[in-house]
Image (cartoon, rainbow, N blue to C red; front, top):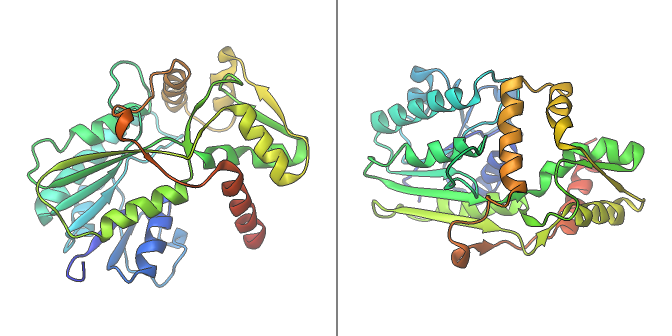
Length: 295
């Protein structure tokens, strides 16, 4: 990979920053694409500034690259998150064509294949379908639910010993560590560019979990009792609006959550799923250590 340059979109985000850490540690040529360079963890990292809605900026940001890591940002402040996604993907298409990118690695999601009302999962579906006519190597990585989604409730857990959830308490789903996910993607990026094929990787954790399991994990790591608080379906939108979601972004998250609850977001190829190693307990211990260190 010495002669290849890798563009990482979303480099200041959770998964993107982990990918970059791994690539830089292995001396793999990497350029971050970010809207705000001040959010980069590594100030010495080569970067290109681009607003993903600005076609010219995205085209310029992809210059000289051979591989591009792409994603569809979830934006709670969007007033039309699906239309915004279409605009971003169209800019990706133009940048890939203009710069003759040879390989794309796209962060999708388990459930991207399902039809019907699936909210934010439509973003992943659009990302996967938008490059059908591109004669390049295409890799779609579909992770399951991130452990890190639960960390958004950390202050509530620490203050009140309560873990809120939209999920039924005993609903069991696939979950994984975003750090494991990033390492998996970094390993793909480090490999030589292949043929003009399409590959889909569906990733899960070492086991399935329900909300009770998550509350017990927090209890164990924090050494305190943590109680679940199930939020009724008719309170979902009110809850999301209260924390800054627009009506549109709330509706799309609700539709996705309902698809999960209804059991639609299972792997398309269950016999071929790849199991990653980190458990929820180990992930929380790891993150609590990081949080404690950086506070």
